[in-house]
Image (cartoon, rainbow, N blue to C red; front, side):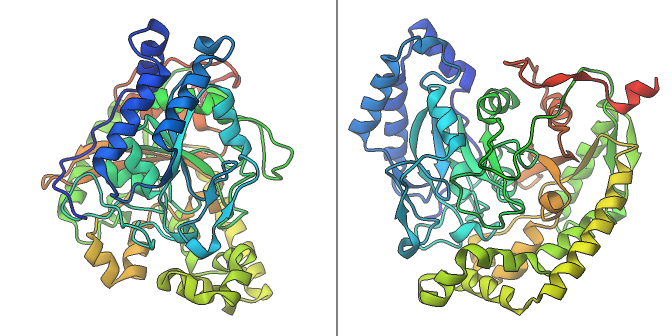
Length: 470
């Protein structure tokens, strides 16, 4: 259903919720009531696929209040949503495909960490089926729309996670990001979408899209909320073969910013988006040293994702279901899965060799810059435009995101306001693996947000390369 909307309505932040609970002006039960009321008021708008029944949600909030030392818990009574490709014990995991659905027998370790920290689980959020898509329309359920109205797509695949935050229903939501699924919907709904370095958050309990590339990610309204949530979620997991330790902290000083030549940027004929991004670029000189960086090797790597054998990796998880129940799969998703069947082992090795060449080329660029800044998306689409050209529009949406995990980068989608015609504008900050703290520091600076880390659990402070040369 299309709605006349003007943008995000971010609700209380994590710190504000915690302060109200600790000070007695609020409580987990009162917060649960507010959340339940807000979700009920919207009705079925495509944000949630399932929610905890009101009575059970209030009971869960009351149980948190009764836990020993409850008010000292880092996420005491803070509500959150979980993308419906991630397991929560006793809750169906659907991946937006009813015939694939199963009831989870265990909770994903990353979600368990949130629950142990006192967070209040609200429900499962909508997604492009099998987490295959960046637009939010590939679902048999209600197709969600952006909070900016105009029948604009919500983005995907983590469509519901972005909307739950942008609508002010929860301060943060757990999402995933394989090819941009946690950044594109954030951009289209005016919230922060943080895709950490692969391996920082356990992917155990996530139904994989491409297991070698998958990340759990976070949607939030502020960098402070991201920091607080990540301090809980990050942790080694021996059950995840991609798991690794957190990288070093940023200790201050100038951050070297890489910008592609304007000629390398593509806005697909969207002059308003182009102007908004170029205006933002003019401000970047005030945030650090700026260096020109070619976008060519990044885009070349991105082209390998859907124009190469990585699409076949989805068949590891969904190949048997495709063979047995093809009519149960969304037509566009079915077409994408079938396209993976044409690749050979030779194709896979050739692509791996080409990717390694591109990784080496990109790796050399980080000697001169700390963070690369590009648009998160080059343009926007309406639901009807995506339905008319589903593959073409999706490719455009992933232009600046597809290469991220292939090149082992982290990314933060940062909302920048709107274009001259009222559509969302977002910048994406990218850095090499394990430089998360530096990239988040620049994001906070751009948003003019003071950044006080909740925990010192990260590795020791280190200088950026520019400081080491000083």
